[in-house]
Length: 130
Image (cartoon, rainbow, N blue to C red):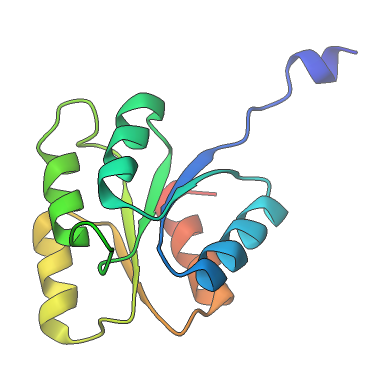
């Protein structure tokens, strides 16, 4: 009985990804590792979800239908409420300039597509200290 009372709450991860196949795969993979998952396909919705829920981590695609991921990062990092939420980019953009831009904006990690769950798990673990 006491173990249920003191059960550790799962860390929540916000996934902002517009590719349904990638989004579903990542969601299933995160849940398999006992993370809670919030997800959206839109940058504006992602910012609002981050503000309301303060997730442990945000996994963000750069190319979104309503705004660039760079704008999402800038918005989140400029808010006192969300500036300390770690951000992990998951993107097809794999040029040095793209990766450098991400780190200059304050991201905590960058994983390129095609999706490699082993690499994704490793980066999440490094960022969250799991």
